[in-house]
Image (cartoon, rainbow, N blue to C red; front, side):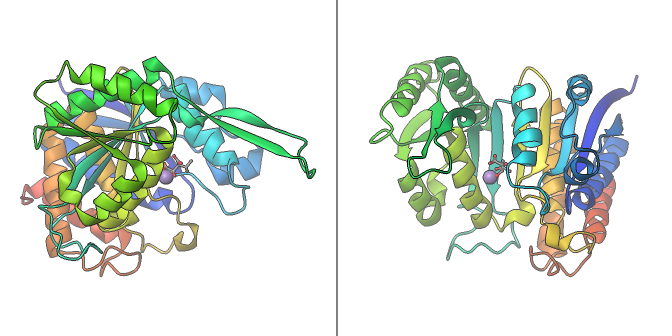
Length: 358
Ligand code: IPM
Ligand code: MN
């Protein structure tokens, strides 16, 4: 019997729907080629829906999402909605509600893609950031006192639980072993200043490391890692870090791999429903122009297939993306690709169908 997957699609805001269309096109090509079926159900949540109805993320949608095999998300963020409402109300709410405690962000430079790092090649830039995705400064702990007065106090606390930290670190060790490249895991923290939070991280890291004698371990402060990511990206294989630092260093990672147009990510619950998204945001100023780069969304679709266990199909998408980047796209920026958004989707999908990727 043909294997069938139920995929929830959240096109979201701005250019989200345009890049999601191309991701779906490529997923369909991969399903046809590799003999499985994908059923897509679209949920229209995001800025426009909120402005029209006042509804952000109804519980019954969360409930329906928990029953899918995976979620494919475009982008959340609308210029007419105050910052924070949609990001916290939809994106973070979903990550937390579905306990997607890992944010997996590969940083990989493909041939034919320009990096701002002088003299670095695809051999030098190929690592993965495992970002904790359910705690830290993102947990929302804190509050304000005397708001709007000269005595105003604002407190934003970083929550780090032994359980939350340990499950993330364990995932990173497992991932590093499975990836089977340099077999090196770097903890990124700030043990010299954040002496409570990263003391917990460091102890958990060193204890879990004993179970993985085949993995080399390393530590770097977050500020130093920003420096090394630029100067010696070849030192990294897998990096594990907390939510806030992971957010920051993966934007840097996206730039050294060629830009937001190609940076993919997965919000992963290894025991539950995971959600895949291009990490670049909704880029509202390009909405409807058909010029945004869909590769980040397509590579997110690849991560989706990898995570649900369709690894051959995932590899075929990566091969097709590689060939497209090498032979067909001139520049990664919006409007500079030499093709429209949907043409790029067609090119990748055709390579997947024809098996001509390499
Ligand atoms: C990301 C984004 C989100 C984050 C925002 C939109 C809440 O920047 O996915 O990295 O900070 O996690
Ligand atoms: Mn971010």
